Image 1 (cartoon, rainbow, N blue to C red):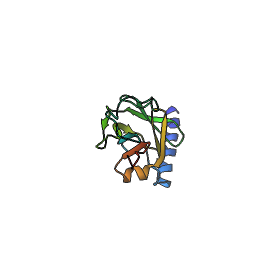
Image 2: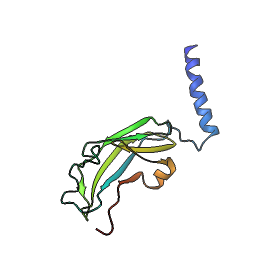
Image 3: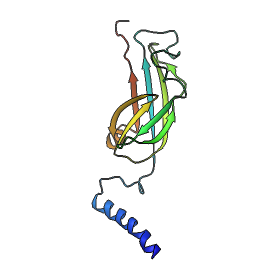
Length: 142
């Protein structure tokens, strides 16, 4: 009797993915690694663009990177790397890698307290499982 009760959910799941093959099957889809760059821009060049900034206290090496699914729940995470100055010294570039990203229909990456745009699984896959996020923009006249 117990074995029969355990098989009912498994049969229901198998039937669902047979009927809806376009929905990713978390039992068949291996976890994916997502990588990204996060750039904190300043309006003008700085001697050390990666120095702590009063307007972005949540952005620093070791800051949390959380990935949210379509329900808003956190499904994976990472931390920001040590930042490196980009070539104009107007921005500080941090990198992150999220290992074992579970299957979801959409993803939103949150760095510190800042949530980025929502992207679909298909769009993220088309971009090679890589995201680029920015805060602020440099002043082109500076």
